[in-house]
Amino acid sequence: MRLFAAVLPGPDAVGELRDAVARAPHPEGLRWTTEAAWHFTLAFMGEVPDPLLPELHARLARAAHRTAPFPLRLHGVGHFGNRTLWTGAAGGLDALRLLAERADAAARRAGIPMEQHRRYTPHLTLARSRPGPGPGASLRPCLDALAGFEGTPWRVDTLSLVRSNLPTSGVPGEQPRYEVAGAWPLSG
Image (cartoon, rainbow, N blue to C red; front, side):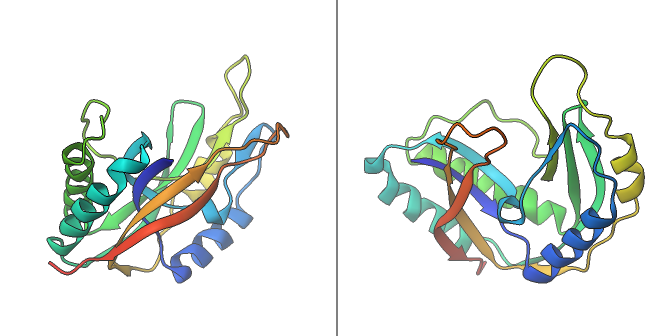
């Protein structure tokens, strides 16, 4: 199954972001993510064979047990090139990065080959330009509208393992479906 470790924003944070996104321009050519897809990916594992799951669960539980809960809030907006619009995080960024490192290490130690390690950039994807030739939709109106976005802090108290179910219908614009496959309380 296709898995990643994540922090899921609290319901109040989701509501604030939903309201801010609703007020922002929606240029043609952008495909907006659904609220169900709003998360901070900590470690993307890709396809994980079933025999590795018990060890992965045990190691993620250990990583969560070693990490104390911390405050986080949705903050501002940014982009990756001309293709991806995201909101960032503020608050306990050092704790979030440490949890990302621990989730990555847990996956490696469970036998999952992970991509080359890079500095963690916390972001929650809001929209992507539709694939195709050309530079993609202009993100500038969205960047300007959401630049001052500041969410209310919430307490991150859970490390989640999320299963990503890729679209299979072939319907253009269909998005992946996500389901929590495991969750562990932060208790360090």
